[in-house]
Amino acid sequence: MRQTMRWVAVLLLCCATARGQVGDLPRSTPEAQGIPSAAVSQLLDTLVGDPSVTNIHSVMLLRHGKVVAEVYPEPWRAEYRHTMYSCSKTFVSVAVGLAVDEHKLRVTDRVIHFFPELKLEMKSPELAAMTVRDLLIMASGIAPDGNLRAECSDWIRAYLSKPMTTPGRRFRYDSLCTYLLSAIVQRVTGMKTLDYLQKHLFDYMHITEVGWEESPEGYNVGGWGLHIQSESMAKLGQLLLQKGRWGARQLLSESWVRRMMRPQIAVNQSRTKFYGYQMWSCTPKGAYCADGRLGQYILVMPEQDMVAVVTECAIAPKLHLVWDVLLPQLSDEPLEESEDYALMKEKIDSCRYLLPVGTDTLSLMKEMEGRVYEFTDNEFGWKTLSFRQHRARMEMSVLDKHGRRYTLSLGYGEWLTNEVAAYPLYSMNARQKFRGLKGPFYVAGSYAWGGDALQVRLEYVNWISAAALEIRPVDDRLVVRVKKAYQKREEEMWGREVTPQAAARGR
Image 1 (tube, rainbow, N blue to C red):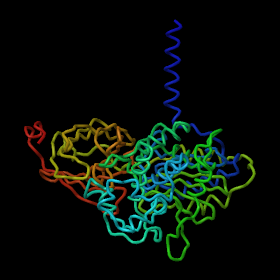
Image 2 (spheres, rainbow, N blue to C red; image 1 turned 90 degrees about the horizontal axis):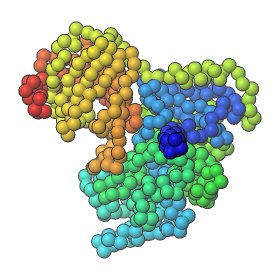
Image 3 (tube, rainbow, N blue to C red; image 1 turned 120 degrees about the vertical axis):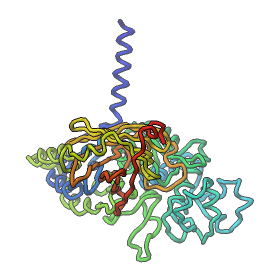
Image 4 (spheres, rainbow, N blue to C red; image 1 turned 90 degrees about the vertical axis):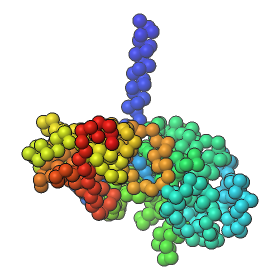
């Protein structure tokens, strides 16, 4: 009996640990931390608005170390990881700081020193002068090349072989600067950047749901590719706000945090915008930001003792609303509770993406039912598609270019979330993208018949991307118009009906 009880206790502990990855940070009401709930509602109205249009995935607001508001529009959830673009860079800067604290490297060290195998073939004085600090402030002296990652597998040699100007003088934003920093961290510590952060930081902060893409050379890609939860992003922001301290431990030196968030180089000639160590200096004096493409943010506001996290997939993010709407209404003292808090909670609880508009069925379905359509190469990786409808549920069966079969269940008037083995849509163009990420990936889907076509919405809810599809059978073809959340333009692809025999062979 005792043995049974012991195993039950272990099981309960494991379950609690699994759930504890989210909900770790203390929660509070906005008023208790000097923020009017009405101001939070106003921010959400302007920042989130219709999430189907703004493509907001999460918003978290913290003050005095406590979460005062958080929203995950349905079908997004707190437990889902999200891919980061350049927001990943700030995590690399933290890893460099940990290595500096351990005396494994200095910011004045020459970059070429860490790649001795290249010394004999690369002897330019500019490369010999390039330092770790030059990489941290995006002033390598090398012109950015967005195609390099897709054109070759030897990124370090290809990058350092490029023509150079004097490093340290001119800011030129380049993710490969951060990639070199990640490679340097691995070379001086003997651990991948993610593993190094896990050992020295994440284990103490209870950040376990995390992954990072790897390059063809075997390094975490650094400048992008971090796969992490919103609350873990908030934890890093809070760590920086607390000058590297977490509970009773000084995990990262205060001096390094100051250097990260100090303006280190002017971004423009007018010297109105500055960059620190892989962080941006924001317009309000004393605020700093980890900033990723399509709207991934960790805002650190020391003067207000606040952290804000936003994840989205927006072509035109609206970060300025945090400064314009929320900050002017803050109080240094707790506020009296009011009915505005209940209204804010109701707004948060009801936040969801709009569903496709139309009817649950249409006679046009008879033209598609049971037919298999074969497609040419496309970004989804779909080779064949077929459809079956069961009451208010559409089954979209896929054979992908790798020979994997899976079915997406699409709900009518609801979101249905599917686990799939296939990779999601990704705007990043790089060799072996997704390498190092274990998955699985989740797709939430919904449908309706509208405008004499099947309207489908797919949300890749533990990634970043979304796609709206308009599907219409035309004779023996299936025409699919696609609008991806990270592109302004629409695309069109089509598949031709194949015979049942050919479909069974997986042609």
